[in-house]
Image (cartoon, rainbow, N blue to C red; front, top):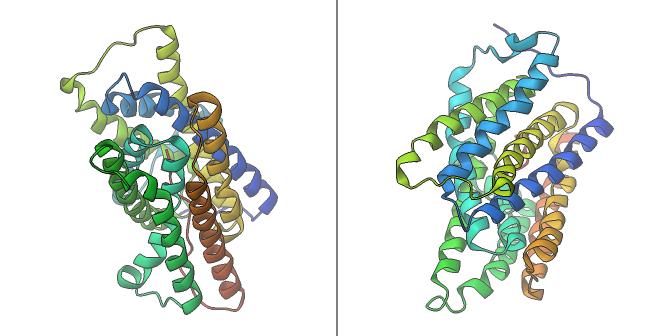
Length: 313
């Protein structure tokens, strides 16, 4: 069966979906940050994934094909994406729980740089000096972000573990980005549905390891909110790449970092250190440069693998 062709390009619609996605995913991280001190990570991921399916099924019902839009002949590709996405989501959430929200989000945005570094050995892609330079500079920014958390490792072992998780999450997210490429042409609701279903089943296996009943209605509402905004964020993210190319949308990815810094300051009383902010700017600038450089090469007819945004939540 030939995969369905993507819709006609509409950059403005793609940008609108991307901006909405950054807002929803930033709110998802905030709910995880709020629930994390009390509830196990596996329980948070389960309810996030379970309630994520509600908006997915709602939009599937609105599709001209109805729920049959969820049928697929590419289950193997969906499972590969789901495995990589599960690893990326788990390590990203773990980083959010161990580090300040803005710092954790800044680390996650090193994933596009990791993807460029992996492109040569995994894809056989030729990486030019400009992109190599951008990756090196970007990783210098990563070192600036993690420096305050590793300066006194004996006094702050949890922060060091958070940094390690953040770096691991960047690699997991980069691998997830590679797996998404095999699913081009699939409807957004189909792609997000199988990811959410896989996450729900896998996270349910952590039930014997100390799940807790929500303490109050406020916590219960946070569990539901995590799923709803996570599902809407994933749908908007997938839709954005159906209407616009990744290099055009890349600069808007970093709005999520801005939201994270604002949320961390207003809700969790976290004030990023100047060196962390500078590192975040360097990482963001390097990522944007890589995307714009690839767009320029594509326009000149150089064949490159298209990058996609991190599936942050």
